[in-house]
Amino acid sequence: MWQRKPALINFLIASLWLAACAPIATPAPVPDPSPELNGTEWQLVSYGPAEAPVAPIGSTPITLAFRSDTELGGSAGCNSYFGNYTLLGETFTVTGVGSTKMACLEEGVMAQESAYLQQLSEGGLLAVSGEALTITNANGVLKFERVLPPPPVPLEGTLWRLETFEQGEVASPVLAGTEITLTFADHKASGYLGCNWFSAEYSVDESRLELGLIQHTVQACREPGVAEQERAFIKAFRTVTEYAIEGDRLTLTYAGGRLHFRAASSP
Image 1 (spheres, rainbow, N blue to C red):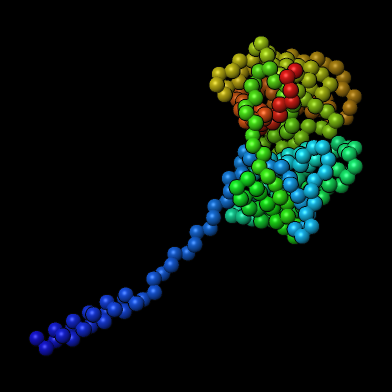
Image 2 (image 1 turned 90 degrees about the vertical axis):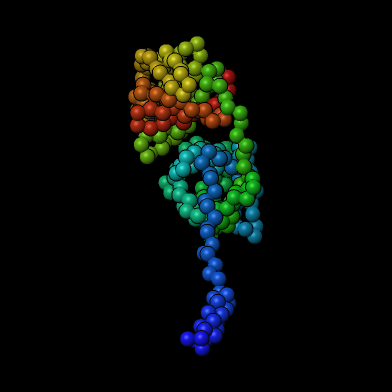
């Protein structure tokens, strides 16, 4: 019995020594989370091949705005554009890019718009570092710098212009060459439909917006699509229940979608 103890002790010491020398398992690295893009806006600094980047031209900046977790849009330098995106890790995918069709008179701007939208549509690897955002793909690198949001614009006394008409999962811009405007003043919401004018009494309670009976003129609209656009807007506007302002952007939520406006100036 006493002869066995040294052997047992030696066995235990050897076991402890082997355990101490065994390699320690290193946990698998956790991938960096995708950057938070929703609600941010960026201005293009350069585009094209990484070895020969091109600086934007024209008087209107090219912008990229992430309007939700799935929707993007902005200015392509002359026309407004819109589309959908997904971001998984650093893999950035863009689908359904469309734009208005306004003629751009500044030399080279239309070609620049086409090149930018083509490169953006390719998606690629997206990275955010401080105030800079890059999208890298086979066509080169899109480089942006963050646009700081302006202070909130007041609901009342501001001229709002409709940019995007969102219905369900479909977002459409206002018809090229037309505009729909909206102002709130003295408990009356009124504006221009592109051909006719409209107005309605309103009241607000925090983010709630309640509209009264909508009245509008009935002038015949000669431009193609304008009358249909007017009817679609009035149908949506009648059911608006909430509003939200972020910087110079106004979003009206209605039964079935949202109306996206941008502040223009005081009426």
